Length: 488
Image (cartoon, rainbow, N blue to C red):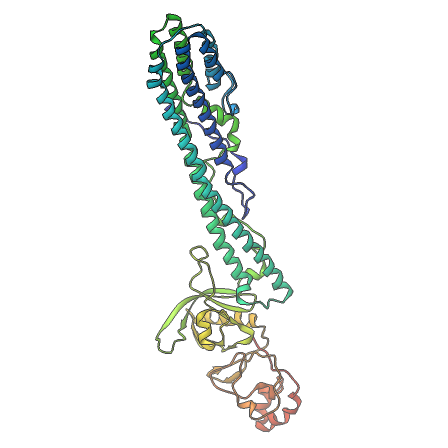
């Protein structure tokens, strides 16, 4: 037994697939093993009944042996769990039936000895099997429920992702921050990771219980052998024939290898057991619907330094920022989808924001935080100052933001040292007072300038340089009905 190794066949019923929510009952293996323990318990119960009946036989002589035979005359309950050939538990019980039939006419006066030495061994074994059965059924049941709960949560979030990706396509990407498919997908990964942890923990528990069955069943066989040996010693005072019959029963029990029944069980039911050689599940290998949808792919993402909105705070703080196809700039603590549920700490809808052209490594965005966090309710509309790792990186962020905001055309320059661009879709009446106001949305420079809507886009800079202020004044009526120029 010590040198034997048994490779369990692959169990198709519990093989974890790459689906996010496998259609597998996690309690199937536990139920199978619990049913097997029930079979062992009934087998030991058969022996207990046998010894108890022997007490009556020794008291009532030959006729009582017929009652002994009746206790084992029926096939074993859950008999399919035992090898029906010779050399196993089923063959052992068949041997007992034959020998007991020969004892019908024998005489015994050892009732008290049997009751005090043999029966307690089997009763203790019965309690051990019962405790093992309770450990398997109750210990695994909780894990199975946790898996079912985690799978339901994951499935609901995947369905939510499907709804939001469909809404993204039908509404042109105009979604609330919490409905952003990118954010929802990160939520799927978070819940999927919790589900996989529960599944792997449950799987490890089952493998541990399953691996212990071989040793436990060997112990059961050994205790049964011990009980039969004690029975043989108690009956030693009987006639030589009775001794020979008991010795034969002992030999039948001792000829059963400790792992004989387990090996036969694995050979018959191995496809329903967990394969310990199968690798555990990994989130990286799992796919789910809409995982690679275009709305879940960021236009740009990475770490940026941002000056705190708290006026009493100095310095900058690092964060992980993402520009999504839904035209949001999201701020996260980091890019980890697994340790915690990734919810944006800040969400700016870029078409409604004012974005300045980059100045070296810095650029600014003025807009309202729509993340519905506690800080967003306090801050309202505020100007955010970003600091990239390099000027080239700042330009990349600015280009991605322009694309997300839907701006077109060259940036509008208010002066040589402060390039500016305006993003807006609203019309502006010809009012000299309104021309002096700051723009509420768009890409602007550092200084306040007159609205470019008062000048035709084709002659904005040419006429200003060529003809001076009068040319701008003459061009104002022609641009009265035009929208503000959107630039990217």
